[in-house]
Length: 99
Image 1: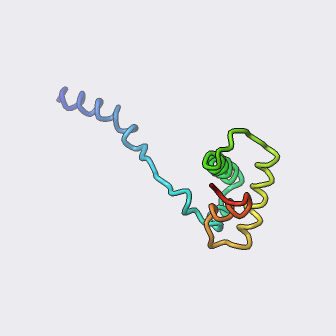
Image 2: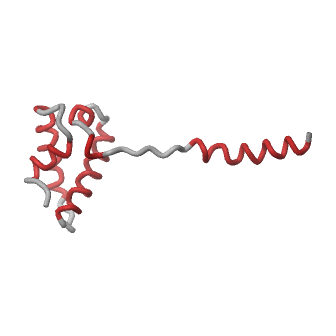
């Protein structure tokens, strides 16, 4: 009985780490309608991540917060008119494309 209790305690210690499943998201497949349905905080985080990724692809190493805000506004405006398109398409349209 004591072995069983010890085994259950050890198993219980590892159970929470097993519950934290990792989720993969293909950011290039997120549609404008999905983006516009996000909460403002999620939109901000998503926009910052996409902006960083896109700027890295273009070789931009500086952070321009005013340009970032302008690009986010342009992407949101574009997404309203193109809800079935990918956010990546909106980002390319707003910034003139990637290299």
